[in-house]
Image (cartoon, rainbow, N blue to C red; front, side, top):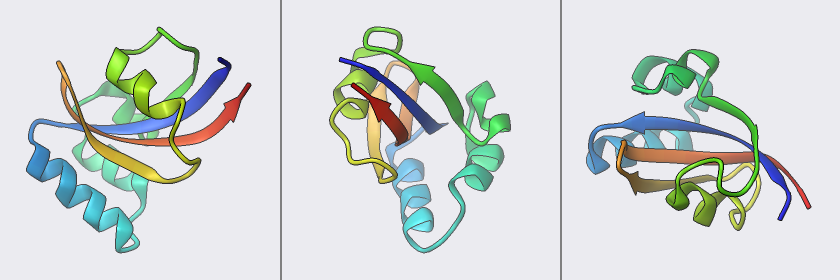
Length: 93
């Protein structure tokens, strides 16, 4: 398995997560919503998590980011931290 570059938005509830996903589907900018709503410090960088490999993030992330289509918003994904929207921006094998 290679590495991925991804960004995410972390919120407290599944409903809020789905609402933000709907806004993105309607044309809202992922990075703008991350800055406004994400409770993760990465929100200030538009949700950018940088590049990471398998096992560097929680298991639920790995299950999504190594199989998801590029540049499509995935989620809500539940982890111990809350609910995430995930978008894989690049992947190398």
